[in-house]
Length: 342
Image (cartoon, rainbow, N blue to C red; front, side):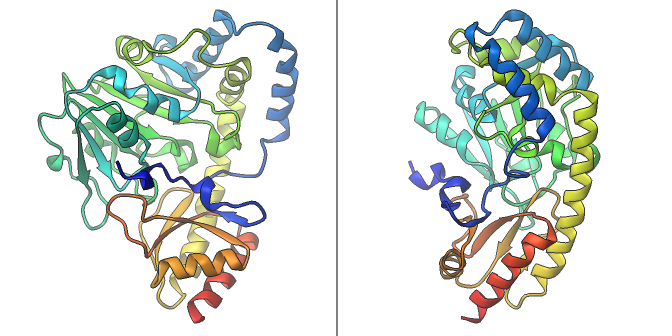
């Protein structure tokens, strides 16, 4: 198996570099969330309880208009992917370019995987998915292309006898959470994965959840050990699912959209730089001539960007950059301008 599939943005974000490689909003959780987590520390002397799990699931269910039985708290979306082999698919279809961890997990489990590529604009083409695939995995919005597929197009992949996994790790970073299937209780076999890592700056905690039919969640969770997530994860899921937190995330998504539009205009004006559009996520896919040289020059200038040739379907000239405030993004623009002229 290609080891590049296991490459992630944190590898590119070496210490001391200005980070445009990792898609996390902020350097630390907001003060109110830190306070909630600190207050929960005194509970670490006890095992996580069923009541804590129930409270977290109830909060998520209320947030998405679902039943608590349709919620499974995860140690990050990565855990959800790690559990996919428990579904014992006969043939998995993984849509690319997209986050590579699902393919890694399935191949390591010895399960057949078919790559399904999007079109030239990185748009999903349901007709390309093999009819015999009983597990289909895709991201929406898609990492690293920043493409948001229409919900109706994604739903077209659902059918009885097939599990459809939609990775919405960046779903709360989209204004109004457009095209999200988090509240969808009708599409057969649908599993939606959600992350708290990106919006709430919690990559070190690993917190997220899955949404789906109770019997499907039970199959997914079958291999998990007792107490699969800790007290702080349950507290984070509960805290970040409150109405006040949802309002804060929505405001952040609107701000990200404004910053993204500014960055698109500025980046597209640089000679030789192509910005894939339309872009909807808190990151942008760029194509620049001499990608590896540009990355090296940026690193020399103290700037980290994400190499994108590790995503099937992309090339060494593709780079992914996180959306940042214009005051911070100006440094990236200066570095890119100098690198392109070098």
